[in-house]
View 1 (cartoon, helix red, strand yellow):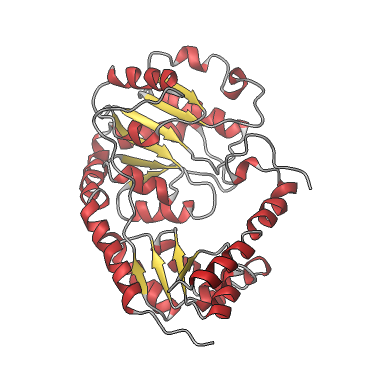
View 2 (cartoon, helix red, strand yellow; view 1 turned 180 degrees about the horizontal axis):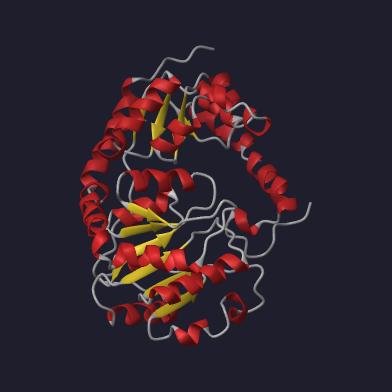
Amino acid sequence: MGLLPPGSEATVDVPFEKIDQLKFAYDHLQQPIKLFTGDQLPDWLILDFAPHWAVEIGQEYGVPLVFFSVFSAATMSILGSPEHLSGADNRNHVLPSHQQAKFLAMRSCNEFEGEYLEVCQKINGKPVIPTGFLPPEKPSAKREISSDDGSSNNVIFDWLDKQKPKSVVFVGFGSECKLSKEQVFEIAHGLELSELPFLWALRKLNWANSEADALPPGFVERTSDKGLVCLGWVPQMEILGHPSVGGSLFHSGWGSVIETLQIGHVLVVLPFIIDQPLNARLLVEKDLAVEVKRTEDGSFCKDDIAKTLRHAMVAEEGEKLRNNARKAAKVFGDHKLHQDDLGQFVHYLKNNVTRRSF
């Protein structure tokens, strides 16, 4: 069996023909987890959809299951009950862990998704317990830069220090979106047309032979006075926390939503895969984001990117959006609130332990 390609940092980096090898490698966790469970006899097994074999382990040792969803409650509500997830690909993976769980845990809170948490509970017919948003720690005012990446990070923060407060758009599409050349070029042209300051974290692209190939000809030179493009990894939380950053153009993945809204940035969403379109609609519904328009074939154009960015960042009609984002930070950035939710989740676990029978 061949090894995964060098530098594989996410599933998107693995060629389609080798995805089964990745799944095969993950399934090799079954035996050590079974040995651990049999030896330690934990009170609960908390799992998501991937370790479908954990259901049998829990049953064998009499350990109850908790299904933990890293998706929003709105997404889980729209996906529906387990009976609706009956496709061939889902039957052996989503259904066992979801159906056999004693209750569901959601990375959410009642203050933001109370109505959807209630819907999830009605649909699934079992308790749904929010764990809070589990937000990452807010970056400190003093930037800590390691020796490994200090040079490039110094360039980033030196540039940010020169920009006006709340003026910069942070652009990033995470590690699981495989953007095509056409999409990258359209985003680039949209940023240029918007005439807004931007910092673009552009992950490595398998179709680009060099940095010069990754962007439209002359783009870097034409936008050098307005923007900065960083290829590869960047300290996202530290960047989002910088006072010059005021908004984000991103894919609306749930983790990034939480990271961005805890700081109160206005959101411009351009979703691509998995739960991202559902998160985008949730954010638009709550007047926290504006979504880039797409045509019927799913494509988008530079003009709409520019128009949407300007609406969110500087247009008078976008002030309500910006104000709502600032208000949302009081919930998303309330670490005590989310610690309390997590504490209640732990309390629920402790008070609902069932005796094992063999």
